[in-house]
Every structure is written in C-alpha cells, then in structure tokens.
Image 1 (cartoon, rainbow, N blue to C red):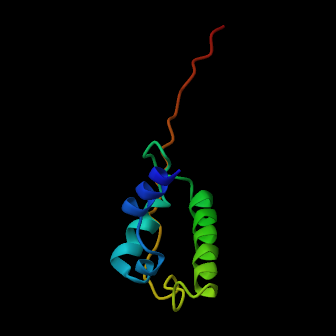
Image 2 (cartoon, one colour; image 1 turned 180 degrees about the vertical axis):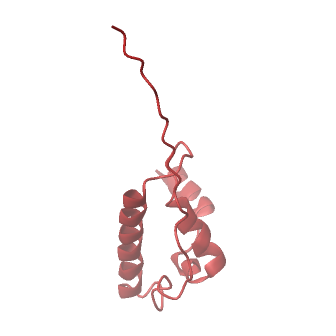
Length: 93
C-alpha cells in the first residue's frame, strides 16, 4: 500500500496546478479521445467535461482551488469528422 501511495505522489500533480492554463488545456484535450487514441463522440466529450467541471467545483468548495478556472479558459473541443462510406449494390435478376 505504501509503495502505491508513493507512486501516486511521484506521478500526479497538485490540484492547485489546475488553475494554470498550460496544465488545464492538456487535461481538457485528454477528455476528447478514447483510450485507444481515437476521437470520442461529441456527447461523450460533453459528459466528461461536465463531470470534470463538477470535480473542479468540489475542489473549490474544499478550498483546494481559489476559483473554477474553466469558465475563463478559451477552449473548444475539436470538431469531429464523420466519414460516410457509400456502397453500391447491383440488383441481380
């Protein structure tokens, strides 16, 4: 258990660092991709952002952050591109 906690301590940032835009932007960008690296659906990105915002609000409530930095940050999720493959079938009589 102690080794796990030591690993977490070495490999995570302090919550207060989320008030910096250079830390917050990569976190938001990470919400836009699936675990396999492919783009997430817009509905998934929106849901993840709402959950992240709730976590930030909780950090503000617990005084780990002075204010929620998300409203001040100019960030939009990337546009998703949908490709439609058309397949033509020939009628056989």
